[in-house]
Image (tube, rainbow, N blue to C red; front, top):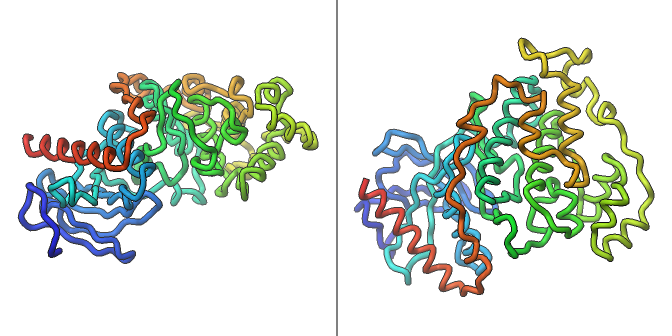
Length: 380
């Protein structure tokens, strides 16, 4: 590591070269590093924090300063992870950089609780109703906490949800999150295609209901073991939606923009199959559709009804997060006040997102943020 300046916390950093040639250079308090995975936002390794005795996941952000978009996303993710305080939402424990000057600043490491795997690796396993319901309950609580701060996640998908063996989960990756009611616009291509709500595909105004739609797509995937709406492009994604869920109402179509309306009116009308056809009893592993264990509300019929109310094309008619939490498929025994109605976090100031900052300015903001986190940790 010649030529790199080490951070103030340690004289000898811990190093790891993963199989994908991603090098980790972190403070020496983090030991026994080993690769976990690599994705679009960066590589992740596991380690032991010798100061706390806890296992941590360390993500090295992938080229955070390659352009303004990546730098802004990194800043937003760090700020939101610091603000969040909910058992089902990932929280930032620490951040570091091996560089100590703004000029040399190039690497950012984010430290969080280490989970066992992503939800993506659970898909394909046969899940009983209790497990499925509990997973959905946690997603709803976590998303409600984000929404209470006026934050829309916008990129919920199985790879952005991590779980432990006891079925506890945490939502992560806030790089695409935005505040409700801001002028910060996005292209539909930003959101992972399979989980895009209809209003995003059609470039309509949208709100927190896009996260509810994504949870419905994830729930369907957990039941069937495969992607529910596997569109090959944004046009095919829409075709997947109307083929499986039917042509939307005229009232919905009337709220789309002129070009979308013209296109939608050229398409054949699709009658919606019943949810019994889309999700037959055989998908649940219970041909009779009997209740699960001592939870009489955990039935195939209630699971289907929740999916039907979530996977509603018109967001004005789609179930809200509060309505979903009160649905019979979420047993009252799951409900914990500290999870469902946790105090809202301090709102994130998205005004920075709307400013035309240069890459150098974003880099300076990120440098200050990481140094502040490191200083707080040293003071503990």
